[in-house]
Length: 311
Image (cartoon, rainbow, N blue to C red):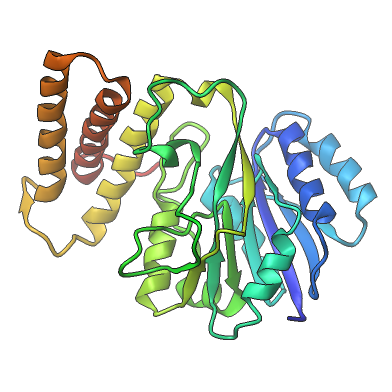
């Protein structure tokens, strides 16, 4: 398809990784549309300014830099999306690089006029050895996404979800669903993690047609500090908080107990029971830690539903 693609990257204090992200887009195999990158500098205190100055000199007319002083990924993405002018808008994170054929995959996908949005897998670039306790249940904590080898339509019958670190939209669809929510999005001091799920819910609610594309690959750097149990606990708790805040605004059509969906309580109870049984038989680090994280998720939900107030 012809037209223009704007790639929006929100960044906070990841200068070296940011430079790699920018260069990966410009080094990708070209498509029929033109491509530009918009970087939103979100209160950086490292040498991001120097990195961006050099990148601007290397890519005159194709790279644009703006500043957003409201802290948080959602606010930065909203600022970047607001100044885009292309037919297509993509969002990637500042710790990612796109695959060599990423632009051509986008080109082919949007040749179908029915397609409104697409997403794809996140392939880990390990900054340290993968821990023995890291199983398959909580890959989303570190941004490891793999929904299989087939093209699948998002929605009923497919449990994959569009993640904003590898997402491409038709501009008109973004205009219809509105901006990223800033009260449940990640901030420098809080691992809130509900903005992508809310945007995905909005897309499906308006009947937008989207596809998981296994060939739309990004490579996601996983730093050593994210491969620690404490990070997983914090992430799951704050994701639970985000979901609690969302539930406060729009409760689900399910049975509740003490303001919490009963299925969430049941999931945590089953996890605790499974832990007790496995401890009697011997340690199984992957399953035991997965069960623990299920309980942290519930604790965060309860806090978010009843006590947390956005700051």
